[in-house]
Amino acid sequence: LEKNAPVISYGANADYIFTTARRTPDSPPSDQVLVVCPASTTVLEQTSTWDTLGFRGTCSPGYMLRTETSVANILPVDYAMISAHTMLPSSHILWASVWLGMADAALAKARAQVRASARKSPGTTPLAARLADLLVVHQEFEALVSDALSRYEDFLSSDQEEPTVGFAIAMNNVKLRASTLVVEVVTGVLALIGINAYREDHKASMGRLVRDCFGPQLMVSNERIRANNAQLVPAYRG
Image (cartoon, rainbow, N blue to C red; front, side, top):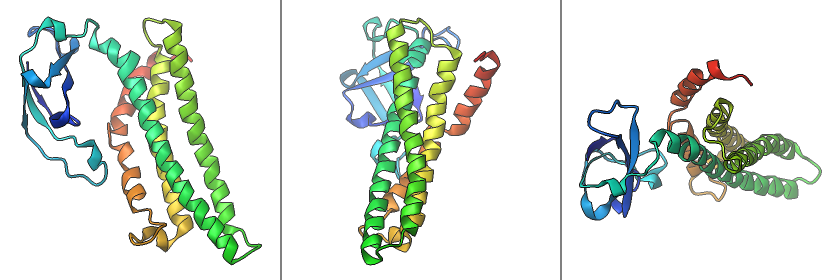
């Protein structure tokens, strides 16, 4: 198998790489399987670098992948089913959970600022009111992730062979909404704290959170997911 992969996260450090491939050389591009590539029989030639504004930890350069494989290393299920049953919902829920964690970290800084302000000026609560508004957004975020997890658990326990169109749209929407809610919370906290949040040398610094919170809309582009939803909604009957 030879594949020019624009992104392989952690490829240089992985013991195994999972990659998609056409089922046979003559198969159409849509007929794909998932192949397990052990590092011991796989050669990676790096073709690009990974120097990004945030998300450096994902370490996702491109590679030319070459591997000698066998049928034993091909998962015996269509990749389309793996994607619909496992990859798409679990990825979107796990990503949303990470982004919720970023929102949690931002709110912790906001609470510290509100408490400090209350100690300096007892009886005044302008910052507390702004924090209360942000908590509304944060609770929506928590509910989004919790509901998505419950939906996914219900699907897995139902033994349905195929996810419904509604389920697929809902899982896509988790990613779309979570990627904007994290920006709402983080930038809201930035405004609440003020200039100290913009200072890298201050304990209230929001630099890393502000930098990273805009990445989710780009990491698997929201426009790509919206386009996928647009193909699904004509068949969605509620």
